[in-house]
Amino acid sequence: MRILLLSDIHANLEALEACLAGAPAYDLVANLGDVVGYGASPNEVIDRSRALGKIFVRGNHDKAATGLLELDDFNPMAAAAAVWTRDQLTPEHFDWLHSLPQGPLPLEDFPHVQLVHGSPGDEDAYVVSIGDALVPLITLTTPLTFFGHTHLQGGFFANGSSADGFRPEYRTVGQAESVSLQLKSSTRYLINPGSVGQPRDGDWRAAFALFDTEAQIVHFHRTPYNLKAAQDRIFAANLPSRLATRLAAGR
Ligand code: ZN
Image (cartoon, rainbow, N blue to C red; front, top):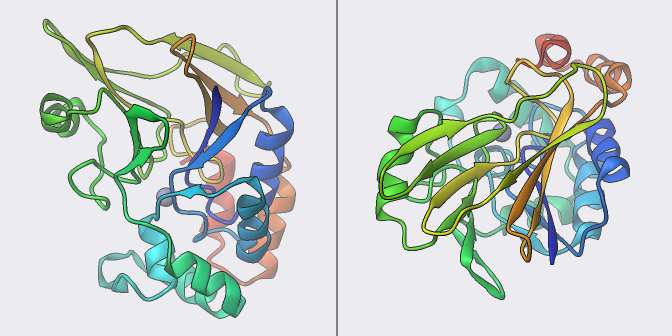
């Protein structure tokens, strides 16, 4: 089984389309949340995402846009985008987003895999450093967790003798590329496919991953997309302009 992993699309339709066009063949799609927020195409992205399958966990922006999370903890830019998104959503999309399940979510037929937006212990917590990852890695009964939320592609591992973080290393900053990670037995992993719609690891290209369950390989991908079109939609929507400009920097 080849599972396409998408996270943090953030209503960026152009980035999502580029990922789907550039992805190798897959059998199943798993979405790790933050389908909306920041970007200017929430309804289009929800339509496209729902057409891909039924496996979703909710993200904090999905909650914020549907009133499940107070905006007090959001920075003004994120709060403005959440309010704008709420106004844009069709009633049907609002209800769908509102009913997305909380992670961690077991992956049917794959008992060794689970999905979460933030951290296995707290769906809204950020796993940025090995310090953040260590407790979940040590206490998890599930060897492989796919997570999102940080918008940083890569992850963390722990085995009997060591624990560390890793990031895929790419050769260019503008071409479609992939880097593969062979999973090892007796090792636990927290793996982030990266953000489709708003990467923050200094690489503007849309990020996603493909998990080959038979080969036990995670293929990390980056793909260029129509950045200007995504930015123009944000400007046209009168969302904070920084939400458009940051896309070019991947920050
Ligand atoms: Zn996010």
